Image (cartoon, rainbow, N blue to C red; front, top):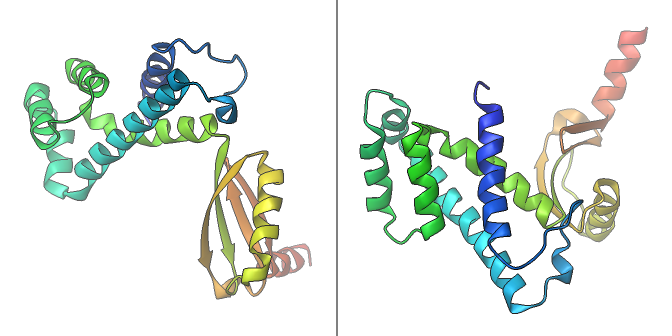
Length: 200
C-alpha cells in the first residue's frame, strides 16, 4: 500500500503520545501489562484502550456505508467538512482523539483512518502480549482439545493471550492450517497430497 509507512507512523505516535503522557516509564523492549497495578498505570491502560475503541468506532462508521466511504476517499471534498461529520456523529470523543483527527484533517489523511485503526490494534495486541491466530480445520474441534490447543498456541506464539478465530474447510481432508504474525503453517492432509503429487 502507498501509505504503509505513514499509517504505521500515525499509529505508533498516537500510542506513544498517550503512553508517554503518563508518569510511567516505558520499557525499551516490551510492555508488561501484568505488572501495571498503580492507579496511574491503570489509567494509562484505560486511555490506550479507549483510543482503540474510538478508532474501531470510526473505522466501522467509514466502512459500513459505501456512500460515506466514497465521500471520505474523494479528495474533492474538504477535509474540514469530513472532520465536522465525524465530530457530529461522535461528539463525545476524547480530547486526544479529536486532536488526532484534526492533525489528519490538516494533512488530508482522514481517509487513512480504517488502516490506522488496524495498525493500532496490532500495537495494542503487542502491548497486551496477545496474538491473533487463525485456525482452519477440516472438522469441528472437540471441546476436550480446547485448553491443550490454547496452551500450545500460547507457547508457539510466545503470547500471554491468544485471540483464536476458527473456521472449517472439509476440503482439507484432515489436519489444520495455522496463521499468525504473517506466519502460515499448512499441516493439512490436502497439502500433503499436493506435495506428494508434485514430487512424483
